[in-house]
Length: 141
Image (cartoon, rainbow, N blue to C red; front, side, top):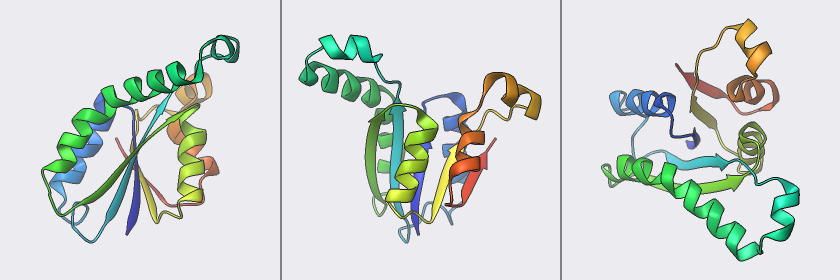
């Protein structure tokens, strides 16, 4: 199974990784994983005056702060096939686009577990992914 694992480095990501670790059927060599982290994009006016190499380095550095401990988590199981992606921009849009373009069988992500009212007020990456993604999504709360 080809699985997209969306991460943000929060305690909800840690809880989702704990869920994966506790269920051997998810962390088996039969699966291929891609870990995706979305870095908030630099505002367009600021990005226009920053040289592209500097901007790219910024996104890579910010992404690596989140990806590094997750890379360590996945490295414990040597038989796993794991790729790591860092994308700039809105997280929900990046997750949906990657799931669609990459032809994944499933998206796994942590969720804050806000109520419906909370999602209306604050918005939710998980809610947006569920609304727009045609790929099945496993939310871990």
